[in-house]
Amino acid sequence: MLDARPAAGKESISTDSFSVRSKITNTPPPIFHDRVSREDNILLQINSVRSQIVDASLKRSFLCDHVEVVGLTTNLRLLTEDHSDEREFANYFLMQEREFKIKSDFVYADLKNNFTNPVWLANRTIVTPTYEAAQFVNDFLLTRTLGELNIYRSSDTVDNETLYSIKFINKLTPLGFSPHIIKLKEKRCIMLLRNLNATNGHCNGIHYIIVTLRDHVIETEIASGPYAGSTLPIPRIPHASQEMEFPLTFKRKQFPVKPAFALTCNKTQGQTFEQIGIYFPTQFFSHGKLYVVSSRVRKKANVKKIG
Figure 1 (cartoon, rainbow, N blue to C red):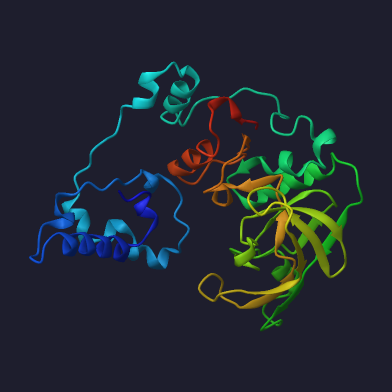
Figure 2 (cartoon, helix red, strand yellow):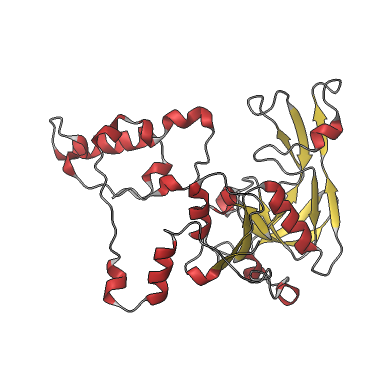
């Protein structure tokens, strides 16, 4: 059984096919030797790779010519017991354009009393389709909590300042970059944007609580999970742009973090939350993105449209 195989490349599944065939017989048998391979409908979800390597995806593999699609439409677990809430939640995934009517504070209704609770903060977020929308929500929610606001500006340099001014560079935020301006408060939740110490759990996408804010370092600790409480001093680190993304190259030195009150759809993939609000002032770019957002929680009642 191969779970979420479309997330891997075509070479990976080709290797799996060869391994299965070689274990069963020495003669070249059919693809996967009539064994069943379970492939989740993760093709609806977001592919994090660049368009230049789409050719490496499963759909470009010669194995796709031998695939027979079998739909799993009956939830056997729900047939054995009375799980009306779960059954309704399962059906909800098929209704991507459903209307939502709720209060705007669905996710952070008790923020003033819980903004120092790391577990409470890490288990909820607001999901948006764009970085600009996420930044707007983060700035708005920061103003609703007490504490001193610290503003950090990056140090940007460009190869040719004659053609591109620093003010123009400040407005750019390439994929994986920290923004030029970061607004933070102590005891708030942030997300790490780089792998700094993977062995000890300090990876891209992990949520932290700010312990102390300094000019050149941020003292943090992991908010939840198996490494909860593990501390990490985060320094400013250099980011370098790629020519394939912009017709110029520039460098930015900034803290590799961002506030985590709101996240883009891409950043939520692979995570599970207790409560999610969906805020989309603009439409999502693809059908699969709304599916990704909806599947970040376990129950339908825990995800709502908030604007």
